[in-house]
Length: 491
Image 1 (tube, rainbow, N blue to C red):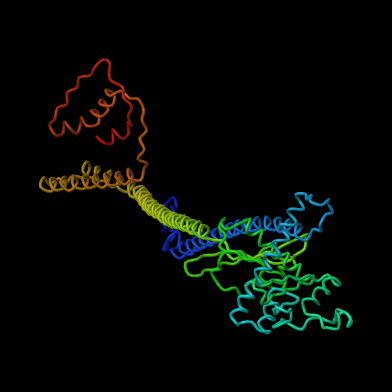
Image 2: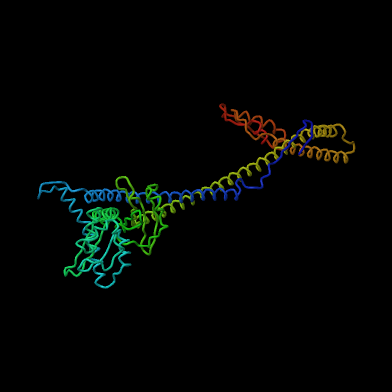
């Protein structure tokens, strides 16, 4: 907008257009989605970390149990394989007693298997193939059932007569029986044997162990005794000891699932590369943590310990942690969304206030422009009006017609002109008052002095209307703060 006058008043304004909100709903949605995603990722990572810590705790518990088993197995194995000490007849030390007791463990274990073979023999279920398989499963060098004369009825394989000379196979012109041959092999090569004879002397079962078999059975018995000392409990559902040939040395408890060769990397475990391996197994109502770790004896891996631990309490803790984390994440998400909504609402509310303030400012500037326009128009019109008023007064005073009828009309018209000029002047004064600042300039003035000035201004006009003004002033007039120009303008 542009207004021209003597002062060249120019008012310009370019309003800022605002069509959109301060924060776009799409931006708020994207930020909220990113925040929720981050919270969910952190929650899942926390759950995984908690689960890993609990699994690590169970693995440490398993390793502690295995270390106890290793210590007990080493002690038992030393007792079994320790050579006899030479002592006076009838005198035995505690270590000798313990060693003898440990050797009886091996003898009793082999004797129990001999009884099992004898039972099957009585039932007619024994043949060469049966004995061959039975010997392979139990690391027997030779297994046979003999009649009352000591001749082999069934055997796991041909007796190794090549370990003796031909002349050693006969005695007194007769061929030696398998039992007599085993005695000569024992004396010459140190391969011992165990014989279980029936009470009615109708037959016998003979079992022979070479060095590898003896080590196998010594380790097997030592492990079994160690497991018995540990016992069940401690969250152990089952435990199996497997040697490097994947044969079970001992076991306790009942596995809840069928073991598979692909469950663990046995090769790396036997080489000691893997300290412990674990996996979760769910079988029916049973929740097991299946573990596998190497079994060390004298710093050498001799087998694998397969252990199942009950993870019911671990799953319960994990479930509680998941519930707590999900509740926490839900609350955080709700708080985050609420905060974003409040931010969106508050910013837009402030923006609306700013827009409203700008509109008011624009309106005020327009009103100010109108006031400046009024001031300019007033200055341009006021001088001609004064000139017209002076001319009207002079016409009324010096140029009154001689004719009385015309003089009366002339005076009426002159009065109308003066009245209209006065009205126009009042309108101009209102415009001038509008354009000026409405701020009051307060100063201390005497009320009596102000009233005297006002009476002096209106006395002539009052007398013309037949009004008599009487005044009575106090000697000590009141002094009050006021704007003298506004007061006079009001009167």
